[in-house]
Length: 181
Ligand code: AMP
Image 1 (cartoon, rainbow, N blue to C red):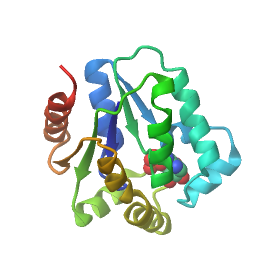
Image 2: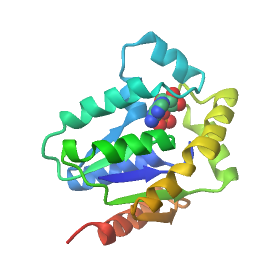
Image 3: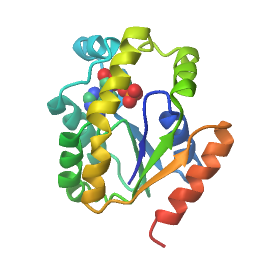
C-alpha cells in the first residue's frame, strides 16, 4: 500500500489515479467512496467541508479493502485524516493482506494550492469549506506523519509543483525506490 498525502488541492487524486493506471494498481479514495455514496447526510457533511465520522469512514474503507482482490498495490488517497484513523489503519492492514510501503507527501505552496482549488470546480470547493478543509489538514491530518514515522513507516516528500507529467515522474521514481524488490 502507498499513501498519497498532502493538503486539499495538492493533486493527490490526479496523481494517485495516474500511478494506479500505469501499473494496474487500485486507487482507493475515501473522498471518492463518499462522493459515490447515496447517504444524504454524507453529502451534506462534504458540502460543509466537515470530516465524516470515523465509524462510517472506517467501515467504508474496510469494505472497499475486503473487496479489492489481488491488485498488486493499493494507492490510498484521503485517508488517514487524523491520528485515530492512522492507528485504525495500522491495526487493520494485516487482516486485509496489506503492508504499508510508503507515504508520499505532495508538497505544494499555499499560493499554488489556492489557485488550483479556485480552478478545480469540484462541488465541495467553495471558500468557507476550503478554509475548513485546509485548517483540518494543518491541525488534524499533519500529526499523522509523526505518528506513522514513529511506527516505522517510510515517509517521502516530493515537489508537487510543475506539470502533471513531471510530478507523475517524481512520484513514480520515489515509489519504485521504496517498494520491495
Ligand atoms: P477528499 O476527496 O479526500 O478531498 O474528501 C472529500 C470529503 O470527503 C472530505 O471533505 C470529507 O468530508 C470526506 N472524507 C474523505 N476522506 C475522509 C476521511 N478519511 N475521514 C473523514 N472524512 C473524509
